[in-house]
Image (cartoon, rainbow, N blue to C red; front, side, top):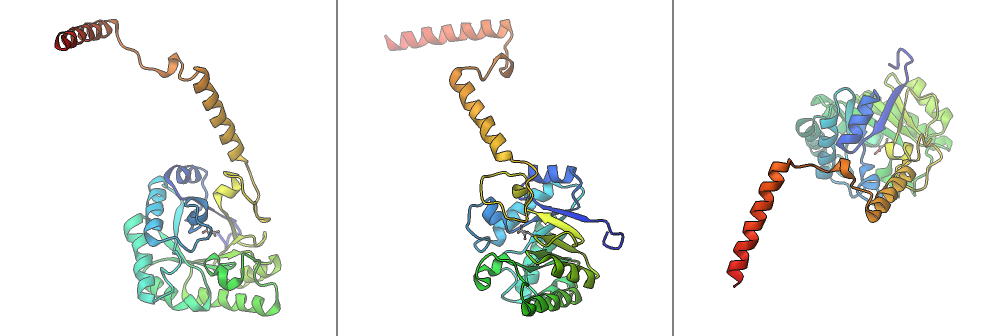
Length: 280
Ligand code: KIV
């Protein structure tokens, strides 16, 4: 797609119904991001997310996908400790969930684990720029590569992980001109989030794009819907109708034939008589 100049689309999903909808919309890649920690599990960062939690969500997503490529995000400490652990954990996603590839964060420091995964037959997507698993080292969720030194480091990291064998690189919160340079330099596609229009593809967190809950909307997000308002309104109508006796209506119930009603009434009568005798 990069060679043809066809932009790649990628979105996050963490569950079966959302995966089905995204797949039906013919989005190219579904990322089961470790953003599941913030978006679904209520953690205040991605750091607490475990392999078992990821496997659970990736399995659900894969059950809903027929068409898109599924990328499973390697959570914090699942690949940083040793190459062996990295390959074993990446392999779990392919073996247990049905995902076709994994994503991991970092530059030169993760080159060895990328090489080891690729040698084991596991396709790896890289992730550079704002890498949320390093939030404490980065000093917060900030745009990366704004100074000459950090921009040069990002270029070197991009080159290093491409040479290690990644098939694509997510660029998160990188200045537009730098993302453009990296995209021009790499043979593999870049997928941007907060990295401007010159990347080979774009990714967003689906819950942000759909406005699924009221929270701070980052500058790089475009909300294509504000679904939390529609959901709140629908839930309010449900509450009012239950309280007013409007729901459920006759059309929501299941009927019984006159015959069965008659038999049930007879049964009820004899049960009442028996219990009347027992009570005497
Ligand atoms: O976890 C995630 O959702 C991500 C995207 C923001 C790229 O890594």
